Length: 448
Image (cartoon, rainbow, N blue to C red; front, side, top):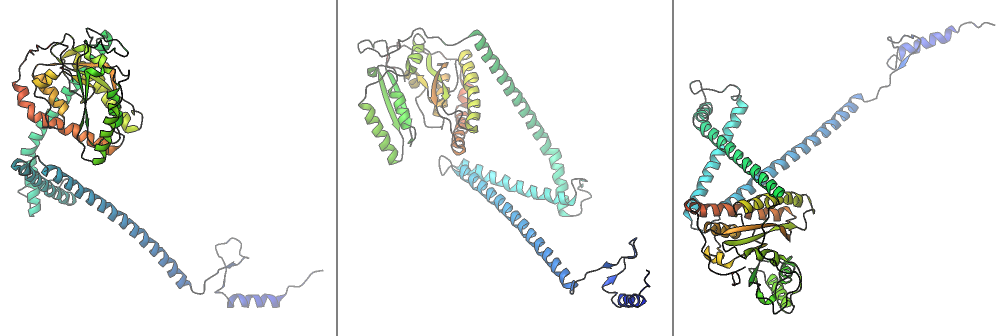
């Protein structure tokens, strides 16, 4: 049974299609022409678009504000760091031994002048960079503006007057680097030779280990042990105890605690510790003195016997490991080689035994530098005294574990030698080989 087409419905559909063409559109690109595509539109299209655009602009504004804030923080940090650097330089340069030192103030004015000059030249270099003059440098004849003329003259001054001395200084630095490298190579070869030949200082006598009988102390010289202190609240007990338990007859040993503390609490603690050890007898303990003092027997020109440092906290952190590597080279190579071949090295400030006759001969302890130990070692060597370094005798100490403590230590270690170099340079140049005239026998009270 066939049905006839409904022409009335078809006519109605065509009319509705033409009437509502804004809501229904025919997709001409679609391969199937029988389907219609429905396009959904908002009642307020312009408002929605403006809303989306305003939201994107607000987000972009927030991002820009964050970037500007980060830039401002960076500039503020750089400015504060630069001002802090200037204040530190001002404080250290102006701080002299005497407030009225004209040479120090003159040096400070010279440094300020060069600092201002460097800042001005940096500004000129920035202007030249943005102008593109570093690609095609202008000449003084073709310069138009004053800045361009100044930059052209500055280029000529750099090429004709500054470049040659700077090149000479660079050559000097290269020569010094080669000399230092050769010194390090010779030191390592000397250390290798010592290891292969098993060279080490030998004493002409040895003390028996263990507690010394009271009536048998004539062979033991009088020894003075000095313990310098300055607000040592953390290590004062260990330092005093380590000295008081040395294996040496107590009637032949004098201990001095040199307390320079300016804090009342530290003074009271150190005094209490000293009073506590006054009530104790010396116990058999480290044999430091028994291994070092015999080297003075028969060596009348020997002033110092230096033991090696060892560190109890060398594996505490990365800073202590690096310090241990550096100082191990200093003790194992530098001081050992210098002690074997030239009988001279810098006194380390501790773990050493001095002959009092040598201290008196070279003028004693002086406060003219922050490295009194190196100062007295240089003066003793200039007077003709010799040193012995014992690499197999160790004295334990601690390394700085924080950067602040390490910075203070390095400042003292590096500023002191420069002061000493200024004070002793002429004496070193004018010095000649001297012989020591020592008439005191070994059993006198001449050891420290």
